[in-house]
Image (tube, rainbow, N blue to C red; front, side, top):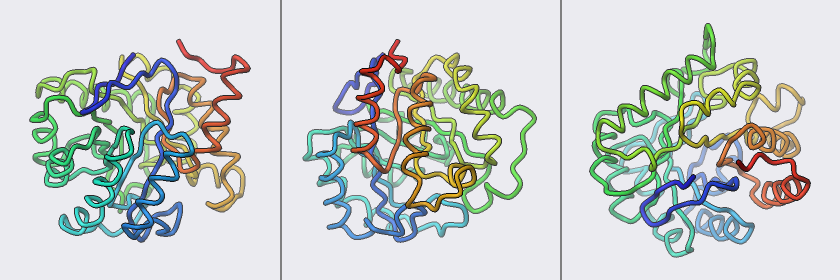
Length: 278
């Protein structure tokens, strides 16, 4: 199964590693280590060397309670970094929800729009549909980042996430976006308590019935900290275990902070015959 994007048709017959580049001063995972343009560009270079299959560049922190930047502020953060990333011969994804940013980054040449709000912002879907071939990732989130962790509740989290993703997939297809351009993300940690996240992992194969590849992000999430008692900068072993479990259950892309370690773990796991690559 291939994922069609602006410049690349990405072969998902083997799992792919998406490296995270947070061009924000308030990221939960790195405390703003890539907040400057130079630092973010250098991080793109590093992740490319470490074996990332895609880069995901974002200028808005979506941690609970994060401040939402203005449109121009987000553009000022990401555009210089995207310009550099586009020279690295690697697919470039942009983590954004705003139609103004979507239009600008696609005009620049970005390959994928990775939207935590699943193109529900007014004008976002139209901006993607107007592009001939860009890829898109539709994610499930209950509420908004500022409120999403305030007692989220579900009757059946897997069924409700699947219903939402199915409805958004139908909406983008109805707008003229071919399904081959779309991957789906259950949104681990976005409006979900640890028990919801673990249920999504345990029953992840049910989401494959939606008929599109899954992109999953467990890297350094607070659910791993709750389970292990580890601080954010000590969650690498848990993140690797979660990534491997997600791939074993059918995820085609894992979104991670620690690219080199994840690439190595997947190589060993695959050589041992442990990965589901069907």
